Length: 363
Image (cartoon, rainbow, N blue to C red; front, side, top):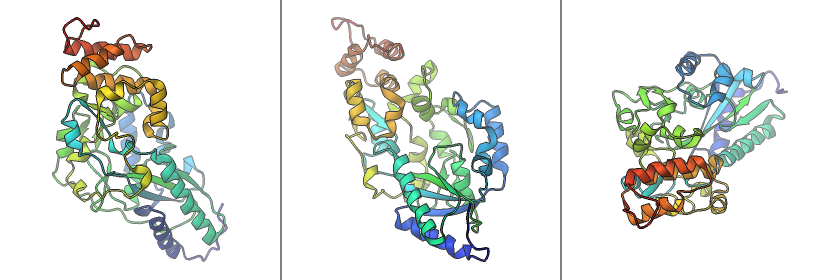
């Protein structure tokens, strides 16, 4: 509970919070109110349509996402922040266009952003506390039922694009979002206008047709969901459409004209690690679980585990160019200990006409 005097100048504090955020490496900070809006209705419709797939937590938390005060009682405002992550990396389309290489969503080629962004937001909260004393707050970085894009849009950090990601005129969409829920009655910022216009590039480029309408995504078809959230087998009809995207997908961002203005991040933790921006599928598939754990420690990829990582790579190999290297990689794990991996390897081998015996015809 805040103990700030009733006559405190919250407008001055709001300006200071934004300046402190920039000093801490946050590219922009905005403040949103917590009044229920149209987002609550859209969320209910999205859940009712089953577009959340196996993400049961989305339905379990229900409308709490749209009601900050239910998540943290006493919340009056949400301080929303964005932090750029685009690394210096091999050009996205060039890797996607090389079927023997693995495409990894650029946000995941460096260290896990959760700790980095959460740390900066906690530092910001301490700066506020140093100025006004103890106040009620809680920091979130994709760690609770929070409508991050909605709150960021409401705080004036950008607008929700047709692909449902937040867009900024001066930063595109290559950034992370995080929040501080607080009981401080800070002045709320005004939202900005939608600048997507008649553009439909993100809808047109989506490999699986997951963007079923402007501002509406069926997660069950989204490659990010299929390669990260889905725990079981990837649907057969979607495997060929995934191509070489083995962790997430950036196609809608790569196609978005606003990302002409995205800036490369100067944050050391977001630099590419272990050459993950430009690496052969067969090389990654040769890793054992120990090497996966060593290489992916501290990475967002680590949380899906070795089994799902291998499943995704098997699909990528199934969509790769037929070669001795691809055939050899698949044969090496045709009898994998995981039934999930074996099933996807068998599918990939069938795609290439690869037999288990090396003496048989290969791809």
